[in-house]
Length: 239
Image 1: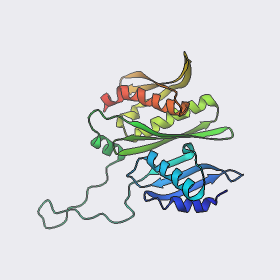
Image 2: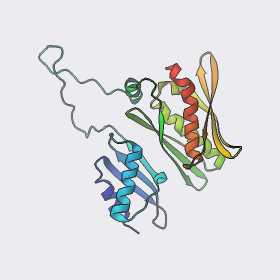
Image 3: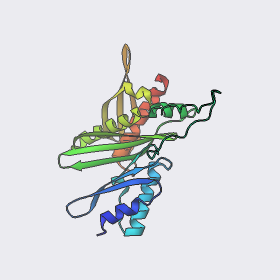
Image 4: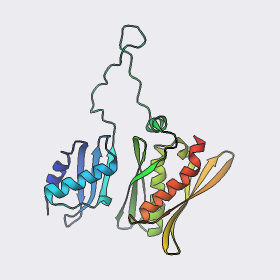
């Protein structure tokens, strides 16, 4: 079994990775990999780089489902570079404060661009479970989390809640929404994830539905896509 501390140091040699932490079970097998990365590459690409380095350098085959990536703005703790003098007073202009993530995502949005799913991770610990979802809109990404019972029907709801939580970081109108149902049903020869959201549009409440077929990635990924399908039907018109 590879020395996990050595693996963590190797992962930190990836240019975008600032920090890495591997959580193992009692037998020393990795069950969670947490990565703090700079923006640039997509979270999915960072996960692939982490898998490649762990396997090539240490012979450790990591399941992409246990790798969690969080991306933060790369300020490195340094002072901002003074802006050019645009107002003609002979002094450098003060840099504008950083915009909230949702404002940056909205401002950078291209016409017709929609939020897409990057990663879904569900962790189970005894009778408890947690879900983490990473979404991307243009060049901005956001993660959401939810925690609760490890029962299968409850984890469906956790994935939906985590997806909506992440969506609130990218889409201002998502603050109007709440998850009503999140289920996986069998239709014909296929399993399909269904999600319904309740949107507060004063003085009324609206219900929107989304669906996504269960693919090789499993029902958790399908549930996250179903929530996005429901949200994309109505939220863009509420901005």
